[in-house]
Image (cartoon, rainbow, N blue to C red; front, top):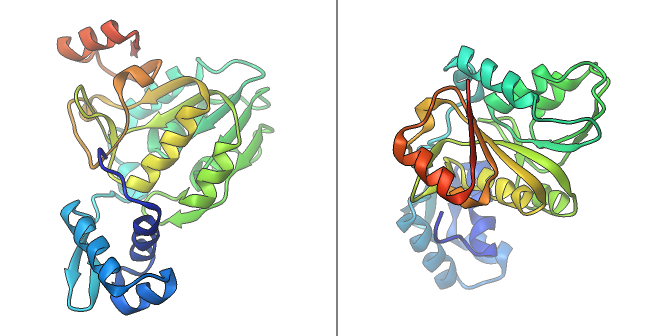
Length: 252
């Protein structure tokens, strides 16, 4: 997202994500600011499409997030192949971050038993997949986002900001040349931004249906990643732009 929220507005959005509704008088007390300040915050957030103002408060707008169980049924074979291919770019001794996508889940699935790597993740389903594989796994804390089984918010971001990664593998809702890589949830995008800043190698895994798509929150420009791993050759314009900025494109 080009214009990001300030710390107070982030807190409002977190409460809205948890409770689906917020009241101006309650927010004013909890955040220790005037009701007029809260009204201005809600107006800005409504302009960004994050909520709908009501008399005395605001309600959550319909989420663009698709539940994990639904996403797992989409492009299943393609995601398996992408995950298998991506796993080949992980070397022994690396510290790797896998985020909460259904394609990154397939990377975890294709890691060999006893692989000499450390996996850091904010994804409950990725951590469960690694159980019993004898792979050192670190799960960061945070606020649980029900739709994607991911841990997000300030706790997750603070923990990840103190870590260094040899490589990170991130899913994306869309890739557009101008908008870059984007996600439908702004808090997941903040997690992605945090790990990108601390990574030697940034890998984006996504199937061909995400190419040319723009979602709510942009988390990286094309020139901020090192490699795109997908299931089909992208169109000429994307390939040329990737070549121009030095991004490797790998496809099945």
